[in-house]
Image (cartoon, rainbow, N blue to C red):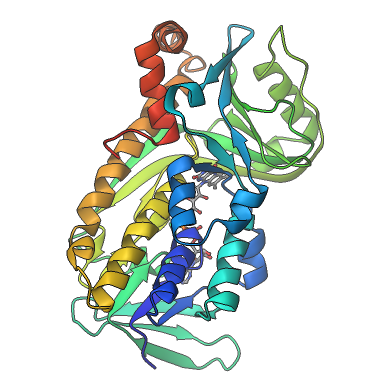
Amino acid sequence: SRFPVVVVGAGPAGLTVGNILRAAGVGCLVLETESRRFVEQRPRAGFIEERVVRGLEQRGLAGGLLERAERHSVCEFRFDGHGHPFDYTELTAGHHWVYPQPLLVSDLVREYADVRGGEIRFGVRDVRLHDLDSDRPAVSYTDPDSGERLLVRCDFVAGCDGARGASRAALPDRARTSRYDLGVAWLALLAEAPPSSDRVLFGMHPSGFAGHMPRTPEVTRYYLQCPPGDHPDDWPHERVWSELQQRLRAADRPPLTEGRLLEKRVLDMHNYVVEPMVFGRLFLAGDAAHLVAPIAAKGMNLALHDAFLLGDGLAARLTGGDPAGLDGYSRTCLRRVWEYQEFSQWLSGIYHGVSSGDPYRAGTTLARLRRLFTSPLAAAAFAEQYLGTAAAY
Ligand code: FAD
């Protein structure tokens, strides 16, 4: 069979590209290794930048989000035993929108498959990419029902299958991957407990970083810095809550509301960037091209920024419009990618400096933190990076 575009991966990036193509009347096939139920329930991100919300809205993809998401305008740093609220909306006029990734993915699948009539195959196996340097590339896969090996020819492949997909596996030798290890691990937790504050909390404590991120009235995400190599079993319920209470304690705030832990995963905190993001007819988007540890809540935002450019560029190219978007795709994306990488590295320094065991680094980290509350220029610089509103992006 033949489609103008094969999109590999039905995450936020792939589904957004697919939706943009369908809206432009371009035929496309999305291939996904997991089931529809699985991708619609996989918990991960939650914070969406104002610009990304507007980008989704312009493409008719923000209905559910605008109806149900909560808007945040303040986060709070906890250090020196006190809570220090930071109002970023006052400085940038932007908000963070809280909308769990599974809800966004469900909206995007429904819109793509059920409303815009896009083709999607779930549960496919052994996806392989072929002839990427020719103008007739192809993707092959094993059909889950018949067990048959199928080959789909296309004009373009959108590689949107995340950090461990077939697209990264198909990268040629000329691809350069730069990697940065943060030197720490985080325990990522989902608690069946209402948020303990209406805002995001960042705890910088000598025992390690802790974070609190409201998700829904019933579920809250927490993070705990832990030594690399730790196993979730090293962190039983009582230990998790006693560390969270200690690291996020502030004299002027109530203790956290505890609850059952629904998810407990150890994240090996690292970042990478693949350059360029285009190889022949393969265009990478999202985590397939770059990873940022969930330090600054940027991964899904970057994936969606890529997807807007890629979807618009492919649609223009395939409907006889301006090819410039597609030609400049890698360069334009990578500028934003490196900005976000730099911010994530800077913020990692703040999160992990106090607990580094190095009193000099702890001292400079606290100086950086206090500067956010004493220097309006430092505060504005942080706010525009945190919200993704800087002009350079
Ligand atoms: P993915 O979401 O990984 O989607 C790729 C899809 O491809 C998946 O459905 C996968 O099953 C499929 N696939 C894999 N291999 C193949 C194959 N061979 N063939 C076909 N399909 C394949 N980001 C934020 O912006 N804000 C946050 O608050 C935030 N919090 C996070 C918290 C945690 C704990 C984690 C782990 C991540 C967080 N992120 C956050 C990052 C965010 O979840 C990712 O950056 C985002 O999912 C990337 O989207 P994507 O579409 O590029 O890739």
